[in-house]
Each structure stands twice: as C-alpha cells, then as structure tokens.
Image (tube, rainbow, N blue to C red; front, side, top):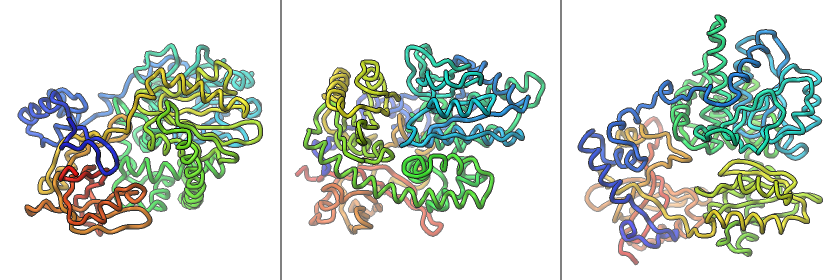
Amino acid sequence: MAFLGVEHSLTGRRWVGPDIETERASDAMVQATGLPRAVCQVLARRGIPQAEATAFLTPQLRDLLPDPRGLKDMQVAAARFLVAVQRRQRIAIFADYDVDGGSSASLLISWLRDMGLTATLYIPDRIDEGYGPNVAAMQQLAAAHDLIVCVDCGTLSHEPIAAAAGTDVIVLDHHLGGETLPPALAVVNPNRQDESGDLGYLCAAGVVFLMLVELRRQMRDAGGGTGPDLMALLDLVALATVADVAPLIGANRALVRQGLTVMGRRARPGLVALADVSRMDAAPSTYHLGFLLGPRVNAGGRIGKADLGARLLSTASVPEAQALAERLDALNAERRDIEAVVRAAALEQAEARGLDAPLVWAAGEGWHPGVVGIVASRLKEAANRPAIVIGLDGNEGKGSGRSVSGVDLGAAIQRLAAEGLLIKGGGHKMAAGLTVARDQLEPAMQRLSELLAKQGADQRGPADLKLDGTLMPSATSVELIEEIECAGPFGAGAPAPRYALPDLQIRHARRVGESHLKLSLADGMGGSLNAIAFGAFDTDLGARLTDHGGARFHMAGRLEINTWNGRQSVQLRLDDAASASGG
C-alpha cells in the first residue's frame, strides 16, 4: 500500500513508507533508548540493533578502521614505500584526474612533505592520454625515479606497468580487477578478484590512508617514530569518499565523519580557498563535499589542466591555493555550460530510443569527454536505468557510464572489453569508463544492454520515493535535526532520511533563480515551516505548487538547518509533493 495513499505524486512517483518490521523495530528502540522517534526510524531502516544504537550514533575511527594487513600486498607496499623514504629515493605519483585520484595523490604528497621529501606528480590528460597509466608516461617516469606509486588507477594496466622496467611500481586502487594482475611489486586493491570484497566499499583515498596507517606501524616497530599526524589528513579522505560516491558504510562512515571535523578547522590552504570561492557559509557537510567542492576539484581534469585539482589539494601556499581555487571555479562554470548543451542533446537522443530499455545511452560527435560522466548521471536519474554517454571523435568514442543500485555496470563493461567489443573499459559497480571503435558502437551497446537485462535492469519502473515516516511542522527543530545528523553522515549507501509532512497549506510560493522554488508552509494548527525545492521548475512540480489554487498538499523531503545572518532555522529540502485530497 502506498504511503499516505500516494500512488502518483506531482513528479510521477509512488511513495513507499517503512515496512511493518522496521516500524516495530523503531517503536521498540524508542522505548528502550529514549531517543527521538525520527532518529530511531533512521536506525531501524539501517538495520542497527537496539543494543548498538548509542555506539552507532558516536562512531569511533579506532573501532571501525580495518586492519590494513587484511588487504593483500599491503605490507609489501608499505615496506617498499618506507625504504624509499629512508633512502631519500625519487618517488613519482601517477594519479587519476578525478577527485579521488587528486585526493589520493595529495595524501602522499602531504605526508612526504612532512617527512622532508618532494614527490613528482603526474596526472594524465583526459583527452590526449585517457584514463590510467600509459606506456610513454611510465617509461618517462621510470627513467627518472626509483619508485612509482599509481593511485586510483593501475589495476588493469599490464603493458604500461611492464614498460616501467627497472623501477618498482606500487598500485593503490579500488577499481575492479581482472583475472590477472599487472607486473607491479604490489597491487593493493580491495576489489582484486582474490580479495574477499569486505572492504570493496573503500575509495582509492581510503586505500592510501590504510597504507599510511600500515606505514606508521612499520616505522614504529622499527623504532623510527610514527611520522606525520594521520588524523590531519582525513579531510582529504572524506572529500574523496563523498565525491567518488563511495557508500557511507563501515569505516567510510567514521572516515567521513572525522574528516568533516578536520575540514571545519580550515587548516588546509587548498580546501579553505575552495570553500571560500564556493561561498560555503556553514560547517562542512557531505552536501558541500559532493556538490560544491568536488565538482570544482574535478573541473581541471574535465575541461582544464589535469593536475590543477591535485595541486590545489596538496599546496601549502595560501596565495597559490587562492589562485588555483579561482581558476577551478571559473573552469567549473565553463563546465556547466558545456554540460547543459550535451545534456539536452543526449536526453533527446535517449528518449527517442526509449527510456525503458535495460540501458539508456547516447553518443554524439565532439561531445566533451569531461562532461559525459555527469550527463550519464542525469540520464540515469531520469530513467532509473544504467546509462552510458559517449563522445565521438574520429574513429573512436570515449564514454562514461553510471549505474543504479543492484546493477553491476563495471563487471558488464569489463565483460564487454574481454569479448573484444570495446577497445578498453573498466570501473566499479556504480560507474565505469570505456573506449569503443565507432564501427562497433551499435553492437557494443546492444550487447551491453543484453548483459544488463540479465541483471534485471529492464524491470525497473520510475524510482519510488522511500520515506522514513511522518512529521508535523511543530515537531521539527534545530535540535531534532542535529540528533538525526548523528545517524549520518548521509550519502551513497546511506541515504538521508526523508519524511512526509501531511496535509499542508501553501502560504507563499516564489520562484528563485532560474528553476528553484521557495515555499512557506503551514499545517493550520499553528505549525509552520519554510521549504526550498531545487530545480522545481525543471519538472511540473514548480508550476503545480505555484498555481496551487488554495489546495493542500502532502510534502516530502529532507530536513536541514538553514543558517542566515548567524541565525539557524529549520528548512525542508522538498523532493516531492502530492495532493492531500488524493486528486
């Protein structure tokens, strides 16, 4: 039965509330712990046992951080890195051009700088070199370095790593591994095929951090001290984890929670400059990492110079940080303009093919490789299906894909590459990249669609809106939101709780900017609440709520604290609405 009887909301979705077992578990938790019902609903939905509720709300990194030695090759990697440090050897860091790669590189660069060493940073150009190590770059680095560390890449780079003959190579990665490993000294990757997968949720920066933890242990055991403060590096781990859409479960939850605290101290020049240019006006949250900071760090790799983001994150110079942040902010604005053009063309093409297929895809001449991943995300959201967007140039196309929960896109892409339908391809469950010959585009997409259909990708309707329960405006408060936030941080794998606020009247509604809507809501019994619906006018939601004609609505969304001129108030971030009369 639909929650509050909403079978078809203003955005066309069915509302789904908690099941009977979850409701019973949250009721029992309220009785046993005295915690607010709204908090218990979140914990029950997450499957947290009643006895563990208090500990879950106060996660400690020391309790949740896994033993680094649980990962294969970890001790070998840390030992070789330590030798390079002790002997003052020449170290090169080869990193991917996204936030995870840049953060991973910055972790090592910052750690080495505190040890009095300077590492060489190499980030490939997205267009000229593509993702991951290439033969020419690895030969160049090998000629001038004793150790090369590949971060957020390298697991599938057999030939390029072999080309670094005479120089040790360490891979610290999280992308899906193949049947064989490249000829590196060590490949540390929780998603190697011979790993258990228990730590498969870590991003590359999480893997790098674990290596630094193991390095610290080896230094201590050798009587050489413990090295730099690792806790001070967690702001970088948090940024990478959220921006790479890694699930906020297990150790990730504690890493991000502590990392946000570290970021709030404003000690890293690059992140301070980026926060200021992004006009962040509140304490850092996962929203800021995912939607303000992450896209700007990514902008250099997408349409500018590939190393800008990593340089920003690793610099110790305030003036350099400010200059880089301003440049990345400008590039991000340019990226948005390019993305808007590609998105419109891709959506039109995908709709013509049909948004109900197992795979939603589009390909276009000259589409910028730096925005195809973002556009793929938009197609995925529009269709609730895995999506691929490809930019064609000459005889090849380079594309990026995004998946939905329960459909492993990375494995399907890897299968396609093994079958010879792709020039190359790889990734993980939720995101993947590929290069395809132009004359193989249609058969490759057809085959990929077949593989995804076997995983049930074609059996999905419009995404239901899942709700944790109901709240009345009078029951909301800043204190309640702060208690709910203790069950976070929220993001991938741990969605923020959404509540339905039933039978509300709209007192005021006004358009803000191009497509946003601000609302003042009341329940008719003295309770009131302000709400904002971002992108409301991109759908029918904006027009329906603006021209409401006095009708009452059920409202659904996430509660947040709005800070304005130093004052805090409760705000509903509106996701959906439905007629309270059922019409």
